[in-house]
Length: 249
Image 1 (cartoon, rainbow, N blue to C red):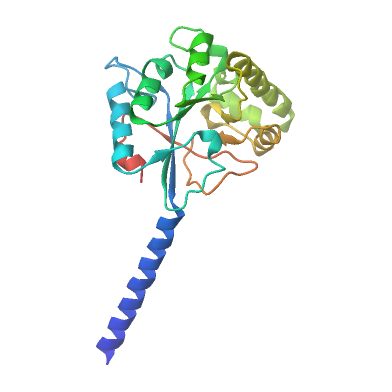
Image 2 (cartoon, helix red, strand yellow; image 1 turned 180 degrees about the vertical axis):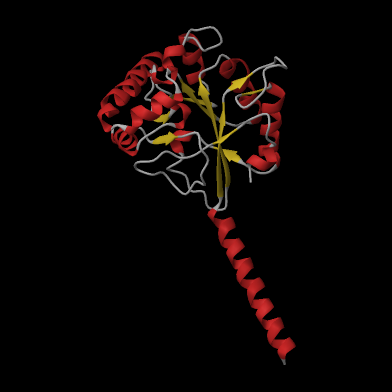
């Protein structure tokens, strides 16, 4: 009798576990990745630089494992039920966005959001205005805001700025300056933003979203459950030190 009861309990546990897993599957999965520079120089490796070959291998992995991509600005509008979604983002606005990232994205039918640090535009190694315009016209790309000059500040300085609400207007003004700059270049509305070094405050995030920014992103990973009104979504940094299989778990 005890054996029968034990078997029934095991069966119930397995059934409940199966139902739970089925429920989790139906919720779908969203992974948001953060890339930076793509470089052919073998010495250019580390946390913020990968080779074109490595990026292409990532896209092959997405394709093989059934991941579709959406623009970061659309993340709050998607139905992720029973879907596997990857959001590909590039920070800073390096020249490699147009030289390597866009052609590889087009080759595999994926899209990405490119966040431009306005103050660096035209500098050596960064996109020019002409590059940004060309990139914005591609179906595989959307342009986002990565501040105009705040990114030039040290992370510790940014942390102190965001900690004091008195600096909110200054921070918002810098985002707005970059929005106007990017919109003058592309002729398109900018509705998504990323925080340099991941530094943010809820008051700033809430203000940006009330001004028309649909989605914001930090540099720290947290599971995606939806768009918050006052907090950015997290991202996983694509470092050469990591395997893409581990990042997509």
